Length: 181
Image (cartoon, rainbow, N blue to C red; front, side, top):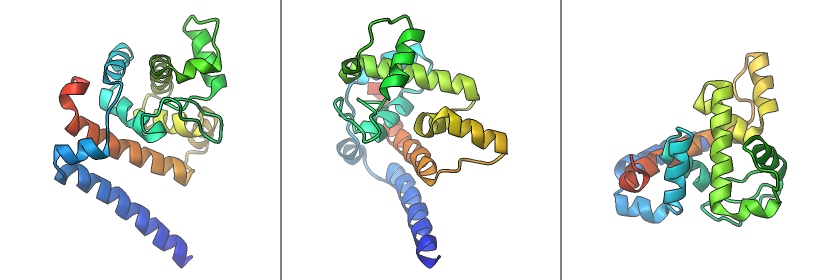
């Protein structure tokens, strides 16, 4: 039990440290620590789907560190770490009919699908935080949490939300002009 308490304290300290880094570190440090790539793609799809471009950049950083060939052990692919079945559904719902998994390695397609999906989740849940939770843990889990009246049950999803939120502040501060903020 004591080890669990220490681990929880360490996570809280790290979350606080991330906020401190954003407020106290100079832009050149933030740019070196948190690179930005594909900003023209991010800006374009953020505009199309009425998303905060700093949030979109934060999701990409958190999911793949801007590696377009990233693959997870769960089978997620590309910059925004989309599962192939999810991406196929997005392709069909947005007019595509020739989806192949290799499409997810294309930054433009991956960010377009991921942006559409975040917008869809935000519309479904009416809340960006719940949309991000569903993006990370799945809609079924978020629906179950909402039905039970509880909050986000997975510690790793809470940590993901904290990470995206902290990194979003970094991108908003360090890349204002590149992201059109």
